Image 1 (cartoon, one colour):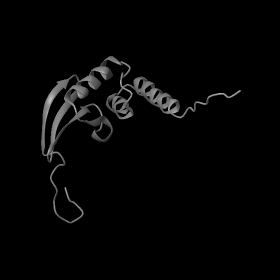
Image 2 (tube, helix red, strand yellow):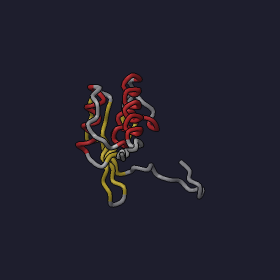
Image 3 (cartoon, helix red, strand yellow):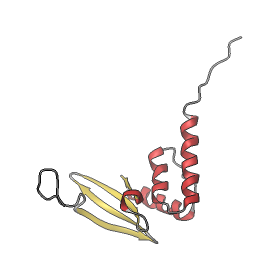
Length: 117
C-alpha cells in the first residue's frame, strides 16, 4: 500500500483484535495511539459501508443486538442511530432508521413561541 510520500504505509489499525462475534457481526478492539476504541463490522457488507467506530464495547454489542432483532434504538444520539443503519443489511430496517433520523432532525428545528394576547 503506497502513501503520498512514495513509501509504504501499514494498515490503519495495526493493533486491532477481534473481541466479539455474533452471526455475521464482529467487534474489533482498536488501539490508536493512546486511545482504545471499538469497531463494529457487518462481514456481509463492504468495509467502507459496513462498519462504525465506537468508544464502548457495550454500545457496540447493543447496536449489533438491535440490528439483529430490528429494534428501535433508545438513544437520541444521531451518530449511534446512524451506526444502526451502517451495520444493517436489511433494506427495510435501514429505511426505518433513516426515517427515524429524519424525524429527529426535523423535531430539533421546530420553533416554539409564546402567544401574546
